[in-house]
Amino acid sequence: MKGTALAGAAALAGGAALGATAPRRLAAPATLQIDPNVVKAQANAIVAAAPADLSGYERVKQRMVAPPFAPAHEQVATGAPKIVEVEFSIRERLMVVDEDTGASIWALTYNGSVPGPLIIVHQNDYVEITLKNPGNNLMEHNIDFHASTGALGGGGLTHIYPGEQTVLRWKATKPGVFTYHCAPGGAMIPYHVCHGMNGSVMVLPRDGLKDGEGNALPYDQIAYIGEQDYYLPRNERGDFLQYSSPGEDYADSLEAMRTLTPTHSVFNGAVGALTGSKAIRSEVGKTVLMIHNQANRDTRPHLIGGHGNFVWEAGSFSDAPQTGLETWFIRGGSAGAAMYTFEQPGVYAYVNHNLIEAALLGATAHFVVDGEWNNALMEQVMEPSVMDA
Image 1 (tube, rainbow, N blue to C red):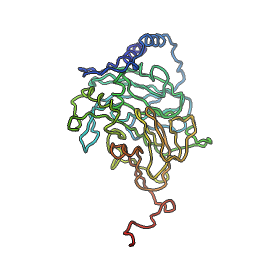
Image 2: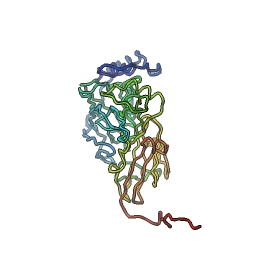
Image 3: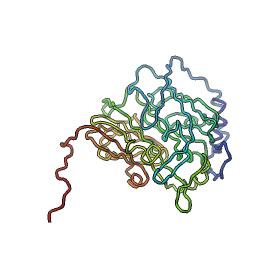
Image 4: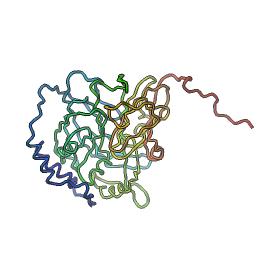
């Protein structure tokens, strides 16, 4: 793994990415270039570093599950810190973004989903990730963990081409929810992120979540929501273009991305991915921890008919949560968390409260909540009827 440090970080400077015939490239701004002397110095420092003493650490495997679900985990850690082993297999796959318009994208994914799977560990655990890039893929990939320390979040040590794999281990020193994403270099960084290659890690305090007075905040379920902005190229008639393979849309996508105007802003990969029969189910009295990741743009989550009882808007569990929020703010390139205990049955719409994006671009999810209605909280006093003259 140490031998890849120089090559991986050098790739970040140039942005090489396609294993097949590369499409036309637009030059990356000079601000994205990395001094090769600094890259070499980092590589030398890594080679010279003493190995970490991991004697006594228990190893456990965490089985990844598809969003919006979370892997099995303890809310309060038992025992000493562990090495938590996870595995991501990169899939480049054609995904339908909107069935009504036929809009589709060659999504770049970790384990096939947008967002990538949620990883959950506790503070001072190690995450040891095996990252695989199968030989039938066409692109170079890597992974940058915002929760980690050094080597561009691990991005400088994880560059792999089709048919390669790598293993990275990092210590989860800061509690909170954090973004991870692919960052191959240059213009390929936004290209990969805006093609779905991002997700979230939750690092729980070892004694669990707490309110501002130190009281425990347990939850009954997690709803993991990844908000994805897509920039799908169109033809002169306004129809979405179709492509036969990953990377073929590179030049067209960069032109669309330069507008900074998404064609879609969706939850969990596609319009309607969390509505209708795919809505998130819950019950009155259950407490849900909503984890919201947005790797690229600012967003404003809002639960229509409910609230953020406790909100870690900036994602840090080191700080006391805000309370009783109507809408909260997730800055681009980060994740946040909000906790709510459902008090009424029915359908709750969870939206980006830029309502243009919610209603027109797809940023809407539904919670379907079972239970008994409480008229003391809300009652229809009179049904809609014709007004008296």
